[in-house]
Image (cartoon, rainbow, N blue to C red; front, side, top):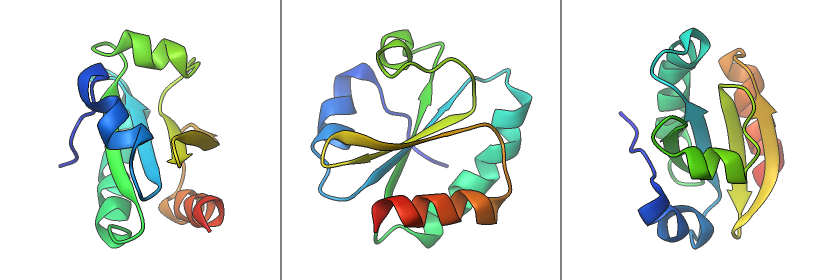
Length: 106
């Protein structure tokens, strides 16, 4: 199970990370988010040498969701060197998400 990032540790875990970071913005009640959770877990495990993966609960971390303009969930942001380099919205097949991530972090 992936670790949730909070406002307290966001700077250290995401903005100051030496590897690219994938953030999964979700909510407990979101069906598509629940569907994507095992997919994101698999990607985190398979790409752990190249990518850090965290989750952000939009209900608990409203400020972060607002700061990054999260309007629908699931939304995935990829950060590299502290900057958002890719935004992916909605549920999708694992291979499509994986392909988008790999292309972004090259």
